[in-house]
Length: 242
Image 1 (cartoon, rainbow, N blue to C red):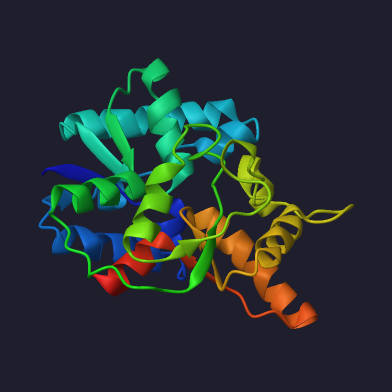
Image 2 (cartoon, rainbow, N blue to C red; image 1 turned 90 degrees about the horizontal axis):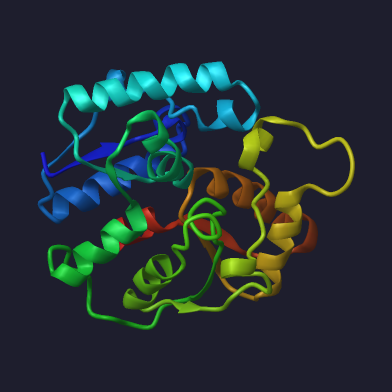
């Protein structure tokens, strides 16, 4: 295989987020990428367990995954989830898991630039805003690839007030996606308001957790404030156009 596609828990189990995994798989097929997945041999990277303080569970999951990847002689990994990307990039090496890892936005950008993925002739599309996932942007410095892809496809990008290095969380990180906020305003609601203020037609995301959180917030604003903004993942957008 040319690359291992690490599906991740979110895209494996959530019916809506499975669409991201399917879209990226279709993109790789269209680009004639020889890829594989681990299927039932893939376990959670342990990211949420470690963030919430269960180090023993994290160690168990990480060591299992590292052993499995080495058994299959995996050298290169591509992920759709920035949380998985961050674990392979920054935390698995300390446990002996040294793999080349790429987030799908960088991977798609490289496929386009190399000519392996043919995109339609650039044409004017709607105005969009892009939400930087924390573990892709602020943690790992990947800001331009997602934006470059959108611009290659003809989208006009208008930035939220907080973006790139100063971006704001969607509210899912650190296991917060599975907790109930009991006081104050929900983080995703605050970020949703920032997105709506741009006047863009669509908020683009590059993370399954961000898609869930932003969609929830923006749908709520659409109902309560009469706005009409959509939320889409870049992989699904690219797949629909190539």
